[in-house]
Image (cartoon, rainbow, N blue to C red; front, side):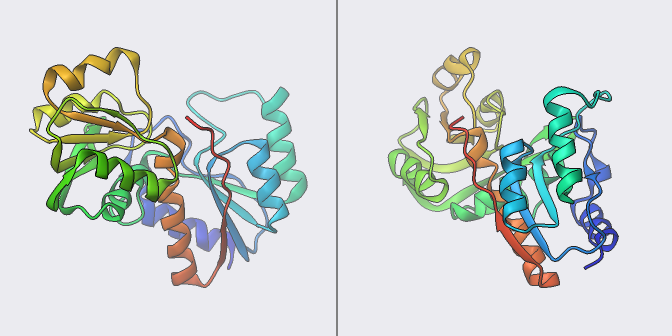
Length: 250
């Protein structure tokens, strides 16, 4: 498949221009014109690039790309990363907030479906645009069983701040680093909230507001979207895809 055709489809499908995002979403490093294999990953690191190249990928799609905010000098570690991509002929495409918020291939909505939530609706926002999702379980789930299910789906230990009911019917999800949205969950009357990273300054909020907070790792909660996107590329275009797993434990 021609690179430019694939990039145009990704830009449209993910609606990368719709979000005020510090990430330079879209094609970050050009790569070869023809794409036969796509690797997907969470982070743009040298180790990720090395594994993607060893897999024979022509394009790597990541959630956390190389370029954020202001222009960054191509020196030091940043230069080594860019040089590796150019020398190996490996393209790099990034989708940050667009891949969090996407309702088909996104981290939040995808994780909600994995957990079996029904009646999915927008939850929480990023600079005025919906980013997360909330829903209800067909029957209430014991809090410990919910944590076990999340661990089974993601392969990451779950930290639980049990400030709410021991039987969970409603859950809000914003993956990654969204600890403060436990307040949003409490204000919307949800039983529980799921994100990636805990924050010290948010610890008491769950207990004082009567809501459960579950933390399943920034990295692992954000493996969902890139894998859903890879599946879409296989089914829609017949492209070979492979996931680069390099967990951070955070």
